[in-house]
Amino acid sequence: MIGFVRGILFAAEEEFTIIETASGLGLQITVTEKTYRDLPALGLPVFLHTYLQVTENEMKLFGFSDKEELELFLKITGISGLGARAALNVLGRFSPAQFYQAVLHKDEKLLTTVPGIGKKMAQRLLFELKDKIELKGFAAATGMAGAESSGNYGELLEAMEALGYQRGEIMPLLTELHAQGALNSSTEESIKLILRRQSLAKR
Image (cartoon, rainbow, N blue to C red; front, side, top):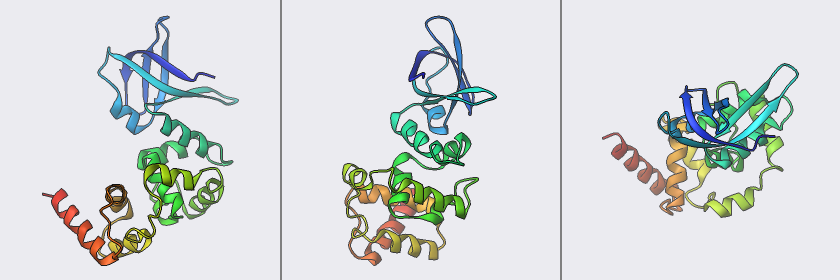
């Protein structure tokens, strides 16, 4: 298995990159949207965590700018019936932290905003990953422990949806506010705070 690639960035497209190694070999690597955005300018050194997928028809190398993306990619592709495309779609929609939070809160509706993920597939993701992801450890490590009591995550999402906002639009802000300890135990006060932040962001 190829655990990482270090070399010079030779070419970069939105879905793949070519890295020239010290031996002069050019490796074509499929990348996520975040990794593409993180790439340096052509001709500069680059390092990617990688996973080599071997199938009957081809070998494909996937690259990630941070290890958390690679770990989530492996968790998703490890589910029977879900392949690399589904994993890349998830990573194109959420950061690992946002995805884990959706799983933590069993947010099936939010997962269906990922291209190619319908209701049944979202249910399967939640079912398969609940035992594979150490939710309590993850929550504690990222400051999300007790999120249900800090402004009531579920109620906040439903309330913001009723006001015409999309879950995918609100969830990153909720994650940020919770990490800052800014959410109030009162759902009403938390909604006012979110609306103020949204108003400021649009100016």
